[in-house]
Length: 312
Image (tube, rainbow, N blue to C red; front, side, top):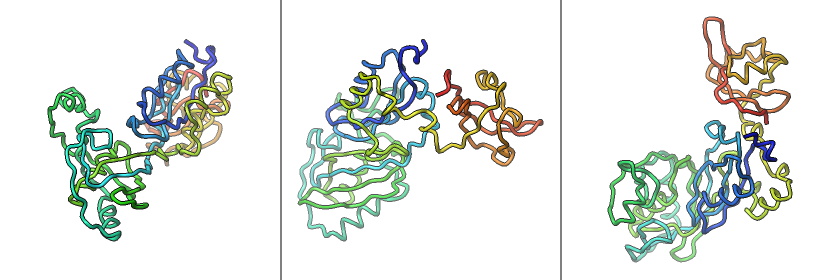
């Protein structure tokens, strides 16, 4: 079905997800207004978490592998001395420990020691699969699964403030990081345990909280057919990739995923010097495909990897 005929444009809506709903719930609220457009998000936030959630619409769902989604930045609070089965404040308390006297210097050092490449055990209540089943299903049945540690890169972990046993922090990390696991590791290092109390994602690669809208605001824009004011176009989403405009007469090559050579492009790009680089392929100023520089005996060329049905 032609999405544009239904009044839906491809692109990304930036949602400021509220607490108390899942990321999928947020997508479903928009989908009720945009059906039958395909939709999906670029990275899950736990129900208790708030902040940036990028929701892709239509052909933009094809572009997720090429989006700049790292690093991710969070601001949150943790509580020392309390350990729960979910490693956050919503779980069942399994330990209540006395919190030792901790100086500001000791706390700062503990945060800094978790920076860099870390191997952290994932939470039992997570979607990581073991023998084909998510860990949270085992956890709900009372079965403890020792999942292997996961590599994560923590670019920065900073203490922002302290109120008794409650610590405010800022975390910048790689995609796929469980913030609950970072907080749990912090509690273990300090010897008293800890759980995540609140969390807000402020950045997800190119997407920032100051550019996000509440679900109510987005729903109002969509219902008023003003989504162009808030929808990030596919070309804008991939603006970290260089662009190549296709010459008139070569558009069909793009549509069929055929190799594009210098004669198909409006200006030379010295492709042979940029092996492996990915480009935005543009038709009349709109994104038509994502392509990669490759070579064969005839020389370098751009091979379309993802082709959009409609330039956007």
